[in-house]
Every structure is written in C-alpha cells, then in structure tokens.
Amino acid sequence: ALEAAEAEANAAVLRPVETALDAVPHVPVSRDMAMRLMRGQPVILRGRDAPTEGKAYATCGGVLVAVGDVERGELVPHRVFHLGGTAPRNG
Picture 1: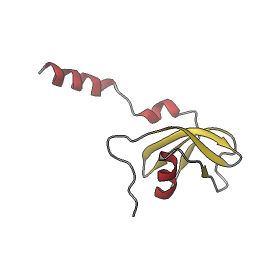
Picture 2: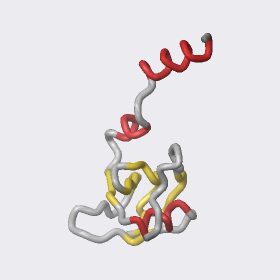
Picture 3: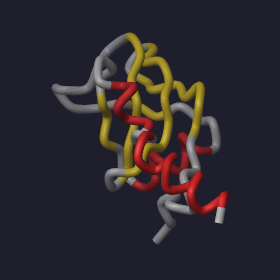
C-alpha cells in the first residue's frame, strides 16, 4: 500500500522529459532516423526549419528519442531514450 501511495504521489508531480527542453529546438524524425539515433549514430537534418547548429532533441511519433548537438547539418546524439518500451519499430 505504501508503494502504491508513493507511485500516485510521484505521478502527480512528475513531468514529461520534454518540459525541460522548452528552449531547445525540436526535430521530428522518421522511424529509420530514430533507429539510427538510438544506436548512437548521427542523422542528416533536412528542411528549411531544421536547426543548423546548437542543441536539439528528436522525437518520433511524439516519443522522445534523443538529445544532442547539431554539427554540420547532422544531429549527433549524446543521450538516447527508450521510454517504457515505446521505441519505434521497423516496418
């Protein structure tokens, strides 16, 4: 009962990771790109709204995948996330 009460209290105050990233540019990525990032590999960013330098975070289907630095048009992941088994699937 004590553990259940603690879990409910934690759920009331815990926020999604993304709330700490409000000032960091967001990059939506495809499943293939997400899989590369989750293996620690950089991905090339394309599009006119893609950041060109600095910090950024990537999501796939609304799920946080990685946080890293944009260098020479690529997102180089420094932290990758596998949140609750929600990793994108191939196929």
